[in-house]
Amino acid sequence: MSAGWVAGDVRAVAMSRRVLGLHGARRIAASKGLADALGALMTTPYSRDIKPDQSLDAAQRAIAATLLWNMRVLAGWAPSAGISMLRVATAWFEIANIEARFRAADAGDKAPAFDLGGLAISWRRLADISQDHALREELATTWWGRADDDSARAIGLMMRSRLLDRATSAVPGGRAWATGAAALLVAREQLLAERELPPGVRRLLGKILGMRAVDARSLTALQEALPRNARWALAGVNQPEDLWLAEAHWWTRVERDGRVLLRSSSLGPEPVVGAIAVMATDAWRTRAALEIAARGGRLEDFDALA
Image (cartoon, rainbow, N blue to C red; front, side, top):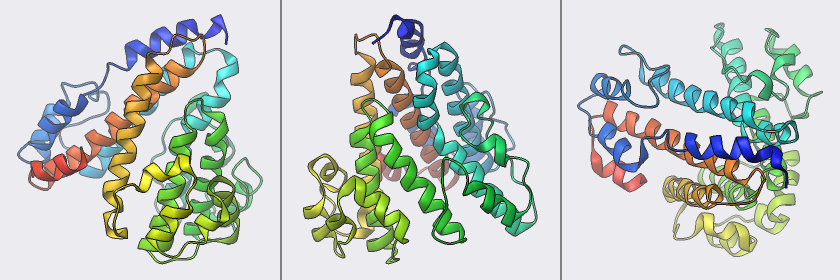
């Protein structure tokens, strides 16, 4: 596409090696408790925000913060034309900030926020709003749009479905990931949790998957109704209770595709997207390994995920 991507692509390939990998994460999972796991993490690429006395939640957040920092570094090497794509790729962190702010409003305590810097979509407009109602009203005027109602669930589903809709076209190589994630979202909400999707969310997910899939009321019906580029996400799943395994397979696909994109020789964003995919999968796997270590280090649990 453009020689402007050369520096970013070279940097992406180098940064994609800043990961624990499957075997490294497995060693973390085998730790004898959270304290040992944190000690081990302090000598890894995730040492930036890890502290020896952190809680599990704080340590998992620190792993995510390291991923975000690496994505911001990549953005600094990318041409200006790629920033909008990178904002979509990092939008999960903005969703996490917004949802944390709503939880903080309910609990009367301000939660820490991920620092998105120049990759923020709407967070700079929202960050200093402390009142719950004012935050909802301002959010409705942003890229994220208005939810069907003011519940935290409706707002969270609206943001996730809008992100998936944008990601189908905004992230090179990411269409299959977005459609697969949309299929998982429908399955989790309507089949596992047995909760109806809000109308606006149904429309957005129907745009991605087709309304027949969104209207499905059984796992078999959903699998049959999914478009070809989304069926892989639920392949081998026999009941809604197995969706945790489907999520793990989703990450496996993201990592595999990411490595293919990393090897792309085109002068474009593909290697950068590939690096993000590889690093994001590694962060997800490391967070899971940390939780397994905190629960006693049952390696069979980790192996089931990996």
